[in-house]
Length: 330
Image (cartoon, rainbow, N blue to C red; front, side):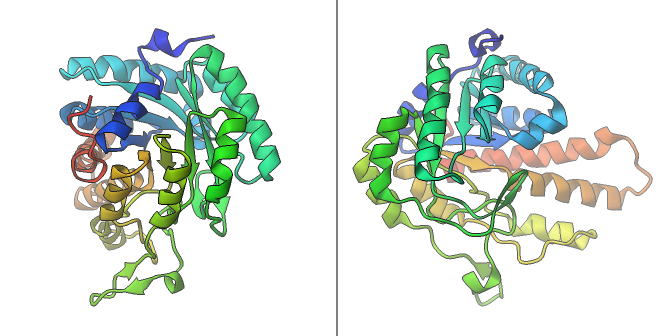
């Protein structure tokens, strides 16, 4: 068994306390490989931002939990080499069972999410409580979820959203003992977050998604004042990356994300953790497609992964400063 403290990581308790007081959200960026991790740490060190390194079930299958754990250990030292000792948490994103959460806790994760939102309310409570009872004696923080987000991301699939019911949140937190709560107020997983018929179009024909349900967020905040709230499915799906991917042979029909000004508003309220995954995939894919199209004879991975890493770093720096507000809060 490896404790997260041995890796130099922190849990999310102090991160969230500071975020709530400071009116910002901690970035939770997913990573699957070295280049993604490097870009995240470079961006957060440059902007002096705390960061949550997220690992999904798909990432565990792709990269192996031991490699991911040791990459997180390396991330702590890498940030120091870059001249900024920032708080770093290693978090399981969308844990689907007690066994998965236990395995991550035993392997040095400092935070886990147990997603029982697809079960009945009673089953969700029981499963979440079981994870909390294992995690807390080991100093690991736990995120639960109420409500269902539509969309597809790795193994997380749902056709329709179910908004979080504010009247359930007090009971859920009290019965489970969770440290943070992921809610559903209109965000969605993936790059195709909404069906065209759910959106309106601006004068340029760009799809505009329905606004987030801030009324639900405000009701939840009244029920749980000062409690850490989490938004999943919060990529903004930048059109410059979508257009680049399409220009160089890709196919991304009806891609639309969450407007960044709405995410900034959420971060100033009760939301203190915002998950971003699809934007990172889009930035890397767009850069790799462009680089390889412009250099068809190139076969050195460093020559296309390097520019992709640089683009990812630049995007995350801007997110920390302009969207999440987490810069200068390490």
